[in-house]
Length: 344
Image (cartoon, rainbow, N blue to C red; front, side, top):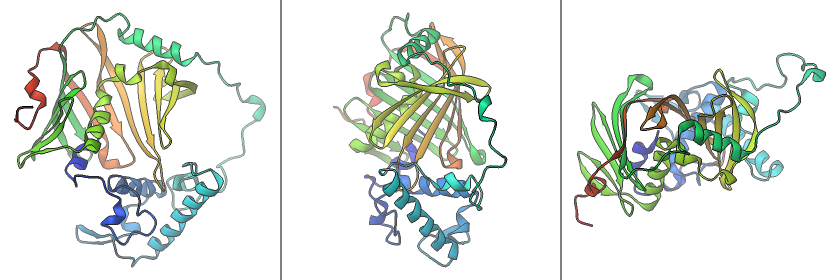
């Protein structure tokens, strides 16, 4: 839910960026919500800021201006990447700016040192199947033996982000219904879905969410349900071992549609979920949303992560969410999910 509040505050539909940004030459079809994320990913791939290519006057960027030669070079490089992926990789997002630049303006042609002794490379590890990894995770958190109690899950906590931004939040989940309230020095914003309709509420009033925005909300809120998020083990495939911090993790992967994929990382020793990664391909660069889970504690016989670190390709979206309270089986009135205040 890193960009969700900002997205919902924008236009009612997520139109192609080229409809309003007439200066675009290569990314006209990219949805508006993905444009700045893609730009940030490219800037980080080269280790530069927006001003490297774009004109800034005071605090305002003049995105449409082409004064800087670096912007023309950037367009040529973007077209090269797009043509290469289309022609050599069947349209898959295989090559990006980072493939060659690795955080530097100078593209890398060779590794730092000679290749390692190939005779000393270890054989690929033998992996459990995905079903066994998922079953062990459910046992580790206590989900396998839990008797589901009626009522909602209520989560409260703090959200610390880059540039000193700090929020508090409340989340109420019951079945398919959602209520999220976020409070900052600028005020309170709430979003909800009552199973049929969704709403976005600020001090200026309430407006109904579009079906696409409801789906955004439901996908974003899934990070608060790591047990249910894993879902059917048959959809996953064990693909390897990777390091997550100082932990070794089994990696499971699945494709949700032709341009989206998800990856899960489970602690090899404890079985707990350490990280989730959701990847969505765009015209120029994959957009990645990562959630790291930590500080698991028992709540009514089930282990919940009390710390979630969230990040994506935009540095300003980095977020550390610390839960101060998690309760299960909470009785809530149906009306709390209807922010419109109107009878259904």
